[in-house]
Amino acid sequence: MALEPAAEAEERRLYEEDELLFDDIAREVARLGLRDFPEVEAEEGRQEEEDAASAGPANGFLPRPVLLQRPTGQQLYLYGPPPPPLLPPRMLPPPFSPPALGMPGNHKLLDGWCFVVDNPGHGHAPSPQSFCGGGSGPPRAAWPRALPSDAAWPGRAGAAAANTQLVEACVQYLCRNEEQVLDTLFQGRPEAADAYAQLIVTNAVPLIESSHGTRLLGLVIDGCNDGLQYLIIARITRDHKRFFRICAARSDEVVGMIRSCRSERSLRLVRNAITPWMAPSIMHRLVTSDSNRLKVVQAFVQCVPDPYFAEFIFDAIAKNCLALVIHPHGLSLLQSCLEHVEWTAKDSILSTVARCSCDLAQHRFGNYIVQDVLKQRDPSHLAIIASRFRHHYVKLSRQRYSSNVVETCLEVFDDRERFAIVEELVWFPSFRDLVTDEFANYVISKALRTCKASLRHRLAMAILSLPHVNRRHPHCLRMFNTLSLLGYRD
Image (tube, rainbow, N blue to C red; front, side):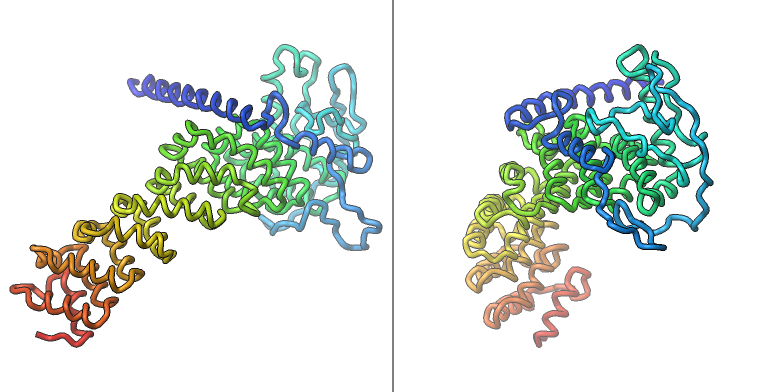
């Protein structure tokens, strides 16, 4: 019982932190000139939905492909190629007559269907044929029922609760009939596919927040055309605050959505949603304790078409590069950023890492970025790292992570710097301890394999002249095997 108040207090604390971050997001949105929901829709999102709603034939929800004549015996794939079947094929239910469900004000749709959810068309009423259930519709008991009276219509008492119940019913229906929804959407009649498309777009946010709906939404996003994909992403990203929370709870699903983006305008929606995160206060939270949202940023960086597309995000990552490299997901984000930025920005990041290379080399994650800089073999960066490592090679060789960095140094440095490394090791007063050290023995073995003959002979004689060294010692086996292969005997 004592844990419950503590859990509530922790949940309250996290909620308050999120609220403070939301204030920062709102200020950043205003500073960048982005338009945020609910004040206005995300940039171009609502307008694109209106265009899509008005462009279709008979004011349908989505523009349909132009097909002059449907080939006989060939299925029309309205929203892309059909996905592989999830279960063995089964027969769809026979046609049925929909129940006579009314809309508030005694208004009815021609086919009797009524969904009390906000219309993504923003003012464009769905056409009657968009809700036609003939031939491919499910039994009437499986459909979410409309609200029976005016009292539950949005804008009146009980609207929020009633609308929430209907949204939950729609999500449950889509999840329970996943195979049928996919069959109808990708290879069913255009009218029925249009109805399912509208239902999925309207409930895209509840679907991605649902543990059962994410699979269906992912399959639709992967297989549908660019127009439907764009509308789904616009619906998910238009509320920046809610998208911020979705990325924390459903980061893997958001990452999959981003990687499925096939058009620049879809990526632009994601960019506008995550750009406010680059504010200093929010970026500090992402780097220190928010690995889920960092994964979302990394997925976006990996998908950008050119550096200028996400220049503002790249600049924020460059400013926080030292904090990112000591975080596992931050390191991956920085490495992805280095693959996409221009050379000037890349050189600035690598120079910053090189100047702090001595400390980063000893970190469990930072050592990887130092090795990446070394493998670039840029003379200016190598010179900076060599100057930072000089007189510290013994300490670095005896440490678990930095010993790997010293081995990389022996591979990429020139003969002058290799000589400096070997001399520092040989002249160490307790050189015998280095030979039997758990990590330094790997550095010495690497030096024997990479150095030229004269320097290799100097190091081999220093090892063989040590008294009372157990060649069978687990930490010495590799070294003395290397000496044997090189022809050195007692």
